[in-house]
Amino acid sequence: MSYRGRVKEGVVVLEGGIRLAEGTEVEVLPVAQTPAPPTGGLGQRLLKHAATVKGMPSDLARNHDHYIHGTPRNWSVMLRPGGR
Image 1 (cartoon, helix red, strand yellow):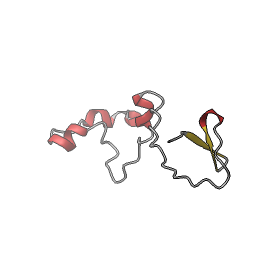
Image 2 (cartoon, rainbow, N blue to C red):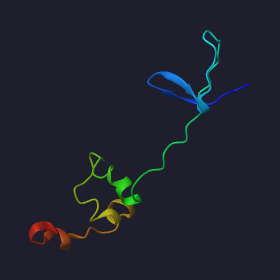
Image 3 (tube, rainbow, N blue to C red):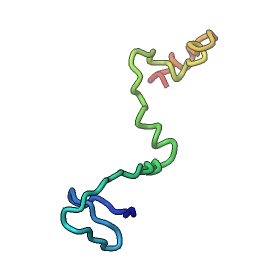
Image 4 (cartoon, helix red, strand yellow):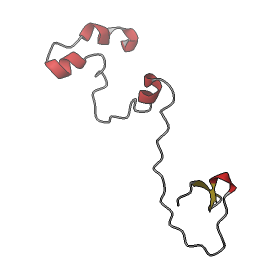
């Protein structure tokens, strides 16, 4: 016979208020828990990784085609006052 329950404050409490006789030998097999679904949208979940890559050029976002495909850099954007 098997019973289900949960651990509360370090003690296994069986469902339905079932009580076993004192000294009863038991075998406990934890049930795998399904992880909770992530909260927030995809943007919020990806935001935690923003600006975590080190050693990249400061204009990587602006000139990614140059770094990936070898196209000419977009210097006009970089030469404006404020660089934006």
